[in-house]
Image (cartoon, rainbow, N blue to C red):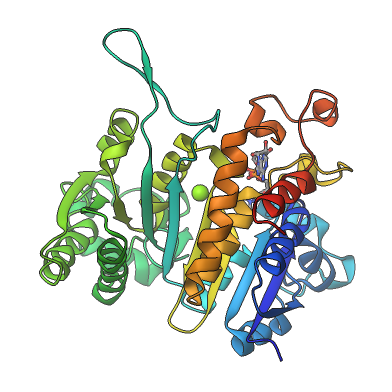
Length: 396
Ligand code: NAI
Ligand code: MG
């Protein structure tokens, strides 16, 4: 029997293309695992009225480890229109199954490493005062609180009377007091001390273990005094256990500006859900963008690893496929780290680095050309060729 069982959830669109590539790499590196397929995504919304079927949750409950490709989400109206006619009027409401997974299993710690690979044409560069160009090595690891904040789903348009009444107890509600209820939309930004402590402890622990000198809390405590304020307060407490690591604080808006000035100065970054989403996409843009952005969603019991890109519907039907499998492959390497197979993870990352640096096998995004049917004739590699090159480098 294999040591690990991984629940594979390819999902929609290019999720189905990139996930098998990651498994080829895991097999080649000698990961002792078997894989069980689980249904997730648009197809199951349309057919069953549930994009995250209970049988998928059961598999994750049992095996605790997941690899996820990507899903397609569509706006409310389109979702309702595509639902199988026999299921309409049964009260099904579409929700994003990846957000659902994070909440169901309390996958509260999201890790998004953003590291530049040498030789990547997509790396951030800047001008030097003498007119030259420099390419700072970026190595930022974003820790995003994954279950609370503005993505908790606590929101209403036309809020119920109790909610409105509760809001009316706050002095700052005065300017809104006369607004008709149906013209009010509320999204709640709720932070808990416990979740702040977990994400901050995970971040400081990671910094300590991997030799980062700083943890930057990226919030907005001067305005969001309560929620961002709590994150800052807990950060000061947690930091006491890590005296060798500096605790920096930045405001999300200023951080977005500094990002392209001195990205190499940042190590581990911690943020709430929305700001973490923003700052991690921004850093990913400095190191190659969606084709390179990997992530892990980690709870106390279950962990799910996924590229941060979506299902890229415009490329889903292209055969041969042209999308970059590296984000998915790096996500699989994160899974290996998680189960303690760090040598194998390093082996994969080194091979990816070598392929990128060599620059012979590049998907269209790595060549900085627009995607489309013609990219292969313009010298771009197809998806499996990138994996082949990585396997070659691994000596498999
Ligand atoms: P997307 O990430 O699917 O694609 C945006 C663009 O990025 C693509 O058109 C393509 O040019 C490029 N791209 C993405 N992945 C790539 C790869 N591996 N290699 C090369 N190029 C790549 O985001 P979009 O277009 O905003 O959303 C499409 C669908 O995906 C939507 O239904 C959205 O809801 C869903 N989505 C799902 C996510 C998930 O499953 N975690 C995350 C983001 C979006
Ligand atoms: Mg995002």
